Image 1 (cartoon, rainbow, N blue to C red):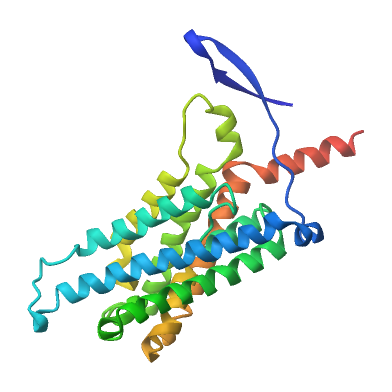
Image 2 (image 1 turned 90 degrees about the vertical axis):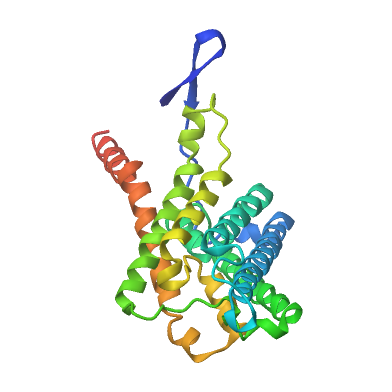
Length: 287
């Protein structure tokens, strides 16, 4: 049994037991009979809808305020820094609101990484991804409905590879950016850390939101920053231009590879799951 030390009041220490939670089953039929399961799917849908609505509106607003043909200025609007804050801030808010209901994924890449780490079942992962993509489409649809005069003119918030960058560069940017995000998700929600550092109040949505913010600062000039296949897909569906669809594969393949690497790194290197499994096998073989 693993023991973690918790700092108590007045400089005292108390031992706290820690057990790794059991892995989620690949297919959990019982989930389909629980209202909490469908409530979580609805939460993912609404959260992704709100995420796309606010962030795409921010992008379009910035582009309209800097459009010199319409009297805009180079320094007008929120700038790239403001766009990055919009994405990171919304993730912070929405993860905080939905973490206790659905886990606050709001991103198929995050869901995929957690599925590979056996944190969610296959059924839950598939339905979460479907809800996230549908929510993203509806969120972008609302933006187009409210800003029809500006939506297509200013790119609809769609992710596209910027001129001067190769597809390999764009793919690498998405892989590394998603790795940063999913690695942060694993670290911020690690139950072992919560047990060990329970004397330190940790607000998990905060580092996750900051990770999104920092990645946007780095990769907006390259790909517009995807790191979320639902975000890229929803914008492409509503915008529906050839360039957005031609580059769409980058915003699925890159994030899924990045999420898989982050899941492997956290689970099998930092948490040493492979070594634990091997040690358990060896001990059982000597019994």
